Length: 463
Image (cartoon, rainbow, N blue to C red; front, side, top):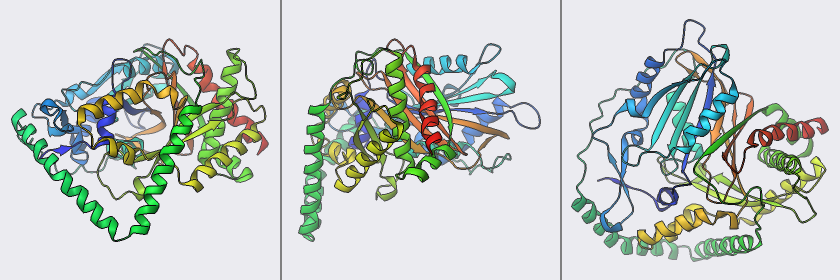
């Protein structure tokens, strides 16, 4: 029987529209192998041989007729590896400016819904013999943490590629529209019984159930109050178009850890303080007035996969809404404000539980669920001003066919009404900031990216 998308995963599918492509991914740069040139054809074959590790990459989404149920994953009988793995080359001299421009154009293209929802681009022609790999995977398939797991499946811990697992994949027959409708009807009939089962288990521990419900209600109320208090920040919130720009900034994990060690908190607190300082510098460069009341509200996703009972490659995330003190001129004061705000969130337990809240929406007919997801995306600027997501990556070097990976910049989707979304990934001693931006609203995305490095330098000097 085909796997049905969870309500949260379906939300990312429904939220996609003409000006909001909902894919995540990475921009990875590699040095040339020690012996010989990088063999792009062999790497393509390697990707094909590793797909047994990620079965979802050979499945596509099928809608249920009449929206009687949420969409399902089915095997693609016409799977074509050559469609998903593509090659490109940069004009000489292969600068990172040209790479960023290419990445922006690639991110603007939505994934083909009639095929498995992923693409990999092999980009040759970087200076010094380097090359890049750009990945795109629809957010309905995977969240940021799990996408790193998938990336690691395609890379190796040593220059010598490991043996690929046996691959005897044979696509299962694709269900007809009538079969999909019948399965959705049967699923709906089972839902009341599932609800009774959940209720029965709750009765076994009324006190714990009441506490959990109370925390959920508090989180909903807190989110509502936060939304009411959020004000658009003109350079960050406005109408967005279809085209994208991409910014990159390379920093070190040692600097982030030095700041954390000197002033307390977590590395994620330091990242948020760096973003606050970077946004402040960027707003000043644009001549924007900063007053004591100026604040930028960040949506900060938090992975709960480690403590989730669910398995698989779906989404398992919650999120905090954090006010970034961009009006504060002193770097240490910004860090203390962010650290205190995050500590209050953690103690209150009032994270916005995306899986739980969207799960409640999922009890409604899927057509209403689709409408709700679209509205949430288009009116996101009323909930927050900027997305900031920090995902830890591999702490040791990774290789592609003998070529060592140098950098790993994350790609995060841009919601409606947002000018920029900021992704952060650590890898092999570095911390890489990747900025997905609207092409027209953010012609100076490189200025904002560079401001992140300057903001960290301020804190590192104090430490």
